[in-house]
Image (cartoon, rainbow, N blue to C red; front, side, top):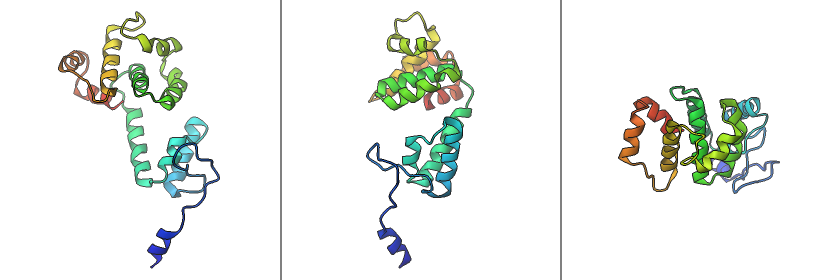
Length: 173
């Protein structure tokens, strides 16, 4: 049948070099969803980001990821600066070099300075951060451990500053 013949056909070769284990989807491949996502990536960042090119192999997941990214970006119950610091701390704990590199490039957009980034390594003792900053960074650290190490006491402290919707937003980041 036509479906079986399509299934046996090899995937088209991309002109892009594989930088990871999966071949990135090239321009002109991946269908409508990939074209729309690539255009948005170019508009925002000047190029199509590698994770997006890989995600384009699965259009439904590319779409879902895009919706989640848009919702996260538009969530505004918690300070963007506070969320970005937490996100960068989570990237440090996870050891995600891409997260740290890309996040550092985006930092000025939300008012996160080079000093903020340097001090994240020693936030527990740094006088650069407020008590609330340190609490959120403790949460980001605990959420990023495997297994997760969020204590009831930490949540109780967070609830003094954040309502449920804000905690969901912070957790999502």
